[in-house]
Each structure stands twice: as C-alpha cells, then as structure tokens.
Length: 228
Image 1 (cartoon, rainbow, N blue to C red):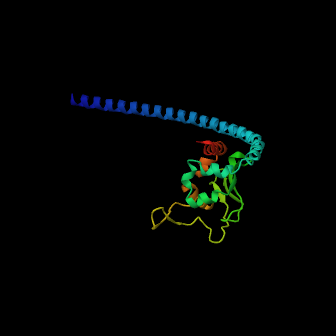
Image 2: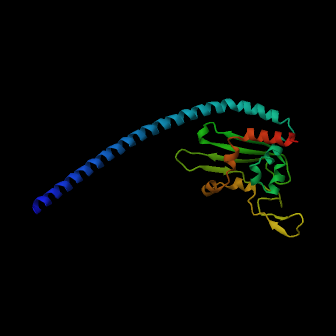
C-alpha cells in the first residue's frame, strides 16, 4: 500500500516535470518568434529612416534659395535679429546682462544643415563690429559620423583686451552697495563646449534654436515691436 502510494507520487512528479518542460519549450519558441518579428520590424524602420532622410535632403536643397531670399528681406528691418533674439522667452534664461549687451550687435543668425543632412549642421552668429571681440562670425558645428561619437567644433573667440565677458563678473544691484557675482556661465562659453562631456552636459540651446529658429525669432520680433 505504501509502495503503491510512493510509486504514484513519483509518476505525478515525473508528469509535472514533463509538463513544465513542455511549457518552457513553448515559451522559448514564442520568444524566438517574437525576436524574428522584432528583427523584421527593425529592418522596416531602417528602410523608413533612409527614405525620410532622402526626402529631407531633397527639400533641404529646395528650401535653401528661399532662406536666402528671406534673409535679403530681413536686412530691410532695423535691428531685427538683436531685437528678436534678446526677446525670445526661452533664450533669455541663457543670457547674463553682459551677454545681452554683446547681442545688441548681432546682425544675423543662421542654422544650416550639411548637404548630407544626417551628417550634421552648423549654427552661425554674425556680428557687427563691436567693442567686445574681433570676430565677425561665431560658429558652432555638430558632426554626426556614422557609428561614432558626435564631434563638435566652436569658434575660439578673440576677445579684445579687458572685454572677455565669459568670466565671472561682479555686479552691484540697485539699492545695494555690496557687489555680487553672477555665477551663471556666460552664453559665450557655449562656443568652447566641444569635448564629449560638454556635449552631454551643455545647455539645450542648440536643441531649442535649431528646429524652429526663424519662425520663433520672427514672432518674438513682431511681439516686441508691435505690442501695446
């Protein structure tokens, strides 16, 4: 009687193990099928990305002469770029008082994709002659090599003697005789942020400006000039 009971338990245990093995094998087969479908989907996504880039590249070239014509029209508007840039509600937080003084000399701002749009773009700040630096252009360029770390270059600003505002500056607030130090980094430090760590940690300025630059800037100019 006891022997029969033990034999029954062994049979039940063996049946249970076989059932688990069958379930495990079924799950493995299901996961493998899912992986096959995921691989197939990734191929479709890669193809879609290539097609999107082809279209973007085509229309980037079509837009280029239109941008040139628009720049010519903008030149007829006095202080368009400095007024619009300094009154952008999000850009303002990146600018210290000294930065704002420099941007009064901003004559134009350009964002240009490379001919192969997926390989990078550049942001160019054009300045009128000013008392701060000798440069007429300040350039920040982003390169996206395939399967490599993003590379960034920036203009090394040629500050005039005693006019380097990228360093900490002491201020005196109204009603206070004691000076304080503005510990925010100058916007112009952004041009020297070119190392990999800097790219990760730097402000979101380029992400903010590049995609919507002209529309946002135009709106800011109109609001500033014509608001009551």
